[in-house]
Length: 239
Ligand SMILES: [Zn+2]
Ligand SMILES: [Zn+2]
Ligand SMILES: [Zn+2]
Image 1 (cartoon, rainbow, N blue to C red):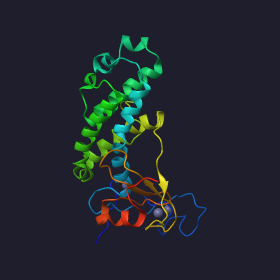
Image 2 (image 1 turned 120 degrees about the vertical axis):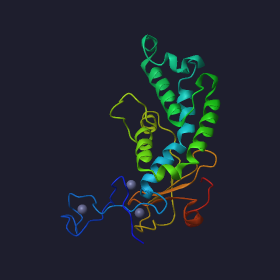
Image 3 (image 1 turned 45 degrees about the vertical axis):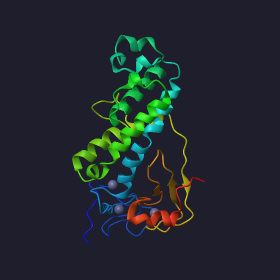
Image 4 (image 1 turned 180 degrees about the horizontal axis):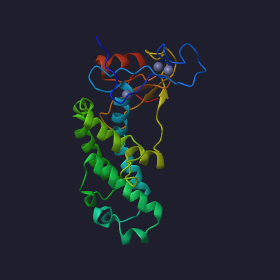
């Protein structure tokens, strides 16, 4: 089978073409130039596929988290009509940022009726429904270059160059981090053979378990390859 390169142009860490100045040595300037192969079922490599999917998986927990941090701000203020302008200047900056972040993440995943979501829990439940719907079509996104690039921009990228004020999901995660529940796998990476695979437990109901190597670009989930990786790395139970 002919390997198609990841459309995002990813390379494999530590792997070099023979013409590269770093070929055969470990002290070269190049960190890796051999292009990463795309997944059989997508236009992108396992790492890109996993990063976009995993970041969307975390959106429900994240909106609950940010919504909890904003505490007693009245639900009415979550409506977009008071988003910017004069009213914004009367609030503490952190709170205004949180409200903007909350609204932007909800807009990204397609939840609009924010004023009716009075509690952090109801916000999370609405987000879970929206993300489930979105990810039901994930393979379509992963097989459409434009669509994948657009989702990547508003979800995984730290900033949207044309709208630097926009809160991508990664930007919100970096600003108000969630608890890291990853743990190390007790089996080596199937690609590089190092003991450097991290296991990410499901971030929401029905979300996959992700297995990501931190030494190379290998990444799969518990549904890939007929459950082979779950059998190798362990069950869904978090330790
Ligand atoms: Zn190289
Ligand atoms: Zn890639
Ligand atoms: Zn590896």
